[in-house]
Amino acid sequence: MKRTLHTTLWLLCGALLFAQTTPGLGGQNPEPSISAPQPQNPAHSGQAGGNIEILSDTEGVDFHPYLAAVLKRVRMNWYSLIPQVARAPVTKKGKASIEFSIMKDGRVSNMKLTEPSGDASLDRAAWGGVTTSNPFPALPAEFSGQYILLRFHFYYNPGELSVDKTRIQQPLAGDAAALKNRAEAGDSKAQVNLGAAYATGDGVTADDVEAARWFRKAAEQGDAAGEFNLAILYAQGRGVPKDQNEAAKWMQRAADQGFAAGQFGLGSMYERGKGVPQSATEAAAWYRKAADQGNVPAMNNLAFLLATTTDPKLRNPKEALSLAQKAVSAEPNNAAHQDTLARAYFETGQPEKAAEAEQRAVALKPDNPSYKEALEKYRAGNR
Image (cartoon, rainbow, N blue to C red):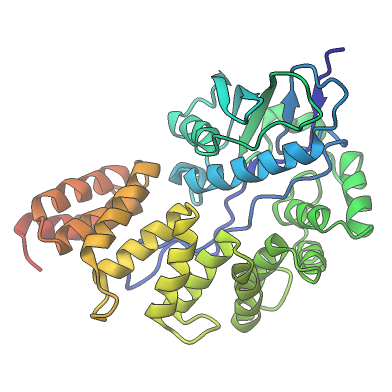
């Protein structure tokens, strides 16, 4: 019997940055945002945000645990590829849908973009979320088929997207009520999802106090996403008193669990001395951990730090250039990454290439005066 399974494994990008630029550092380095929601029990369907569909026969095999692992990998890789246009302040909206097969040995086959978002950079990020996750684990041993056919939906800043309007109700109702029931029963992933819903107003009335309450419940259970999101709220003073020390405490806990966004966030706090002693060495160490997991903002920040630091033990323009090139390759339309690449070229004695990269940054952000100043400097070849 052919079975189509709609899941609530969310693939959701939300761009709630607590700072856009960093004075004194050229405005390059973005700070972290509220983490994308965590996977829910796939038996419940229809949540606003996104879903996965199995389009082929499951033979009665329970694919929920397998899909949770697949989603975790895709979400991590996709999130690191999300382009600047989907982040604050632009926060472009869109939805991309991709179909592909996972073969018995976990290899991806027959990928196709079935619903473009209308923006090539959003489609490219969604596509990359799948391709960089390939291969997946082998299909469950009890499944005798040769493949499963999936359709993934990637939502960027969904808010009031028309595709989801029938699913968004105010106040809490339907699926959101079921989510709250699971959260109240102690499911930490549901608690993170419910906190994110309250933080973004996605399916419920936005309420930062409630967001903080649910993130805290998840964090107190040791959920890394809950710890990270609670840290963000403390750093912003949303739903809780603004407290950089508390923000650093929870960010440290998320980072210690290997949560890439937490490692990036902790690096950012060390670089700025927010809640922790300012330390370029510690910042570089945590950025590196996140960058090693494919976190693109961490690559960018580490590149800028290695290119510009005056600490001879840290300074490494050659490595900075390599990292900046990787960041630009992942997000070519990110002006800040082009700016960092330009600086890395300049610090490695390549002013002409620096000017070319900075020109791209200016073209992407023509109203940024620091990019124009840097372009003049590189063209002149002056340090």
